Length: 193
Image (cartoon, rainbow, N blue to C red; front, side, top):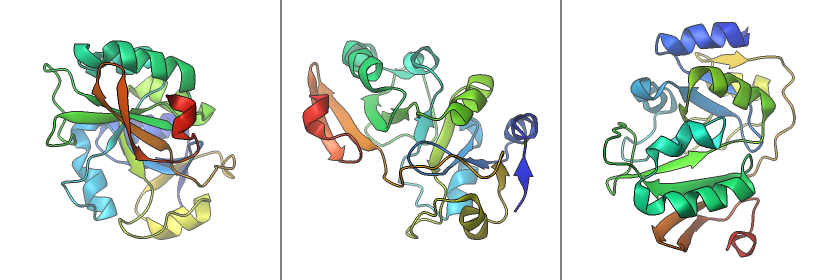
């Protein structure tokens, strides 16, 4: 298990390497968006499955949100972020990422984890996914995650803060004022709408 500092993590991310870090829900693997192919390779993830763009603060991700959805996005984001909620929104036309859906949508989240947000504040938004081999249950502690993905460095300090072990609730914007539940996690849909 190789544990690295935030400074080392920044260096690795800049040259296209993924790193693993703790969030409030599950450990995450992340990299700079232009190197998102590394996550698919390391996780053995199907290329048709989108990744999540993880930010540090709302302003950092606002430019990715299509104008039609921006008011609804800000309203929900300001109420629940940082926290265990992923918002799927149409992506702005002038943005291009190689890990979005065929429908031109993007999942965005800001975790309630000081160490994750501190890192992302420095790097800018990261392409992320849960830190596990696709189809295998996600581990929650640094040692187990390192055993699952031994080639990826872990952001210290270790031990990590405890995570919930439950994925984020995911909702998708459908039209002005309307969201659809994709996956219920820690936040019940009844609290969101």
